[in-house]
Length: 289
Image 1: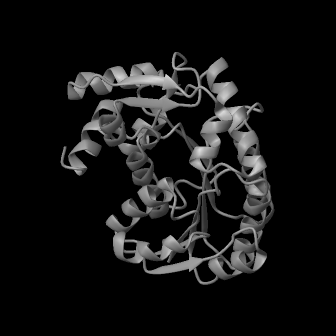
Image 2: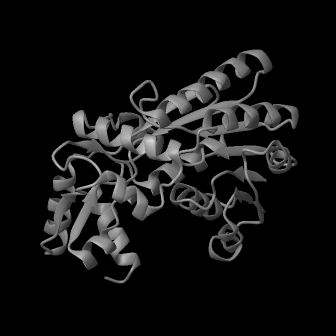
């Protein structure tokens, strides 16, 4: 049995889809009651709805699983502590492998969510040295699913919270899920490894829309939201730590962007990673457009 945390989020669902496709039994946990639906929609075997900042939930979800795929909860102040306690309780429960879905460049200190993941990575390394705890760290780049081609097609615009001219690298979440499956299939081969998962594209929001328009014949535009606070109110970022995290993201992305190299992902997949245009075509086909 494989435990997947933050299972009801975008990343969790993409990864679970790949794991079930590969024949793994999955225990999904998330704070959202909607997680129960994953039994029907994705074929997970077990669901535990609970708050993973509570030690009782952590102890419950690690019991009886052989491997863990830990996707940190989005923008919570306790993120680093959740990772630490989950690792420690996994060791006590004799979990055989811990796969941590981190982020590319966790050393970037201007990003709160990167700093938290760096602390979890550090704890994993120490625990491997101390307890010989098998781990693999995956460091995906900015997910392509943050660009919803169906929503862009319907609205005619891509609204984003940072400068529309700065460039980021991207990764297809399905490619990440495929790598997770491969890592789980051969724990010893991937023990103590840290892998950057980066696709081949390096595009600004305007560049994303340009590629979308070329593929679809649409005339969408990219727009930066005029008021970040209003944007956070609309999308439901009401927690003060979450709001601060988004502000850090907006400034860092606007000032610098974010970039990585696709070589490692190419090696792990045994093929070229999915391009942004291929991702868009796949998503539009899924919706029958």
